[in-house]
Image (tube, rainbow, N blue to C red; front, top):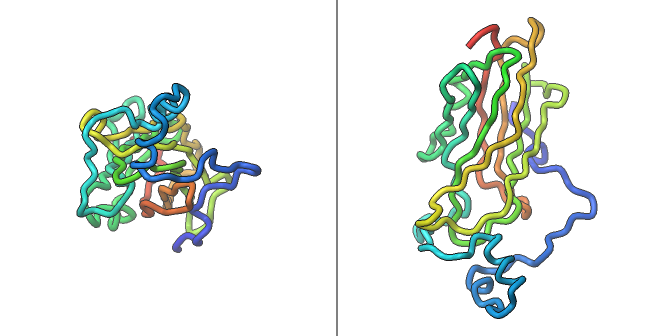
Length: 200
């Protein structure tokens, strides 16, 4: 069952507004160079130098390279999202998570052409087509400048999670995931699957 359109959008934060209107890279670079606080702001966005790696033939702003699951006692599980069409068959090849195991997910991505503002990773977990209780999570990744030769990729490690345990939770799950920014632009949406089992 496909996720509903708004199901994969980040939760609204009451009263939150962008601190500054979105501007082009050229506008950020032209900001007053004598203003020390403005210089710190520009550095916090990653506008501190290096050669821009944006591909003029690729209009995407955020390119997700991979998701990685790390857990003690097993090699990392890597979901490669870098090749065109790589997300299409992920649902057909589930990976296993040991019940009660702790694990950490991370995302590697690159940014091009403009400042990426307020990127979120949103996921909805379902079992037999029904969203499980607490099955929606929204992880704020942050705001980033275009990737440079000094920093070609960004990696964001998410909060540690613990898989549920017990016979009732064992089985197959499907996950709908999306990477969405503050403008509600979806940069990548895909489905994948996992199984909770007694062992790896």
